Length: 99
Image (cartoon, one colour):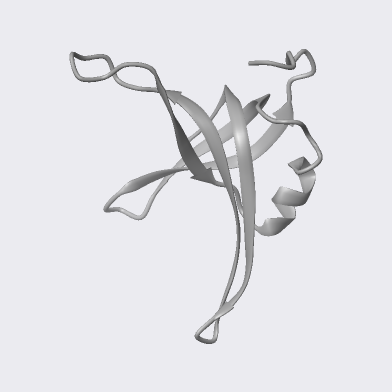
């Protein structure tokens, strides 16, 4: 299932290489998330989602952060657990310099 939402992206990192003969290639996007409501929670945290290969990092590395993006997300399952992944990020043009 795909859906769209806006994310305040705090930053991103790419990883590409080989470890013990196994290749890896990924981009991780860090975004701002609200903590759940409750007596022992307040404020916000940084969370992360995966976004395909390190080629995706090249698409967004030149922006200033934090920045607001429209994100296309997809929930996928292996039959046992569900994961949310980023399918696409598009910079929102009216992003203020301080979010």
